[in-house]
Length: 255
Length: 281
Image (tube, rainbow over all chains, first blue to last red; front, side):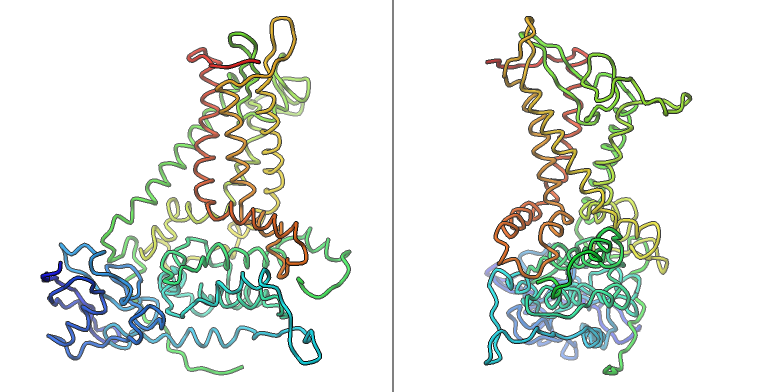
């Protein structure tokens, strides 16, 4: 591919519901990613093509889109990993309202995040107001801190994408966020009722699509969602655990 | 609470069955799961209704003691079989209903698999199309309720079926140990290893890897705690379960295939179709 190869792209263009695929061609050279191709198309034939991007390194989460129907970061999708014998389709994320072309309005995610109970640490361990914690205790939550908020997991989740349950389901991103807080060794807050009622964790049917598309390779389903589902089951669906807790001496939550 | 003006997501043509712009063979994986689970369920049902040829006690050089895992523990059985209670079937079993010892057993491991987090995700896709594959539209439209309501909310009993399933693994381990002792003509028992012993031991190990690596076990062992550094034994157990859990899907499939193969092997021996190679010490 070093000498260049002309590749066709079908890019979804338009605003709101008035959208259509438009075909573009550009020359692809070795090492290019989809975002490079989009920029090249902007420069050559579609200067008005709207596309959100920033770091080009898979760390800002801005260039989320659907390449050949799969949610992906355009800057991390290499052209030579795609089947170039047919046009490459590029669409915006479908779980969120489109502003224009490849740009979507993801502000709903920030509103959901706003309603999740914030970090509430226990009293400081030392008089100087600091805490002590072991790496072994905090490493589980550290995995979730890798999230770059690209919202690809939200996009691929069929509860939002297909069933439009934005009013009663928080989505994988916010389960990861909640897990990071809920499993934190210093945190004392209980978010389980919110998880069950407001964020509707019961809507998740564990298809693991969120894990598959995560560019940071966070094991969203196995390490965040399912453990939270189990904690919700402890609290609301397990009569034996409830009975056991009646006779168990009270102590600081899950320390 | 902070008020944020949030636009409603617009409707997209993604709620139609099969709607996708994916160009890969997205249907292949759910199809394979559909075929694999269907084949297992059909075979298991057939094997359970047989009610015979589930125990092999013959062979050359010494009598074996191979019991199919579909029938273990053998609560009721025929004379000469390792039955727990001395009757071919329970007295309360209705006379008009066919009986097989497997009917009393299969519900336990069956429920473990039915409520397993891995299988749930797999059969929701393959059998229920919710969704058929990632980023592919399903047939449920606005009726989707997930696991929020009856009957799917009952999936939360997974923890209650885990404990019986763990007991089954221990029983199968005992069975595989018992399968390494062969009864000679003079009535003495000699240690030995036959192909059947290896098949049954492998079965118990694989089922153990699947059962003790399940998400529920991981939670019960230590996942519900936020701090495990002061509980080193529990932390070690949690780490072991987590290591198994990382490959839960593989354990699930390999153990599923092997448990069926174990039944087939004992059945073929019992029918006399094959003979068991063994070394007796």
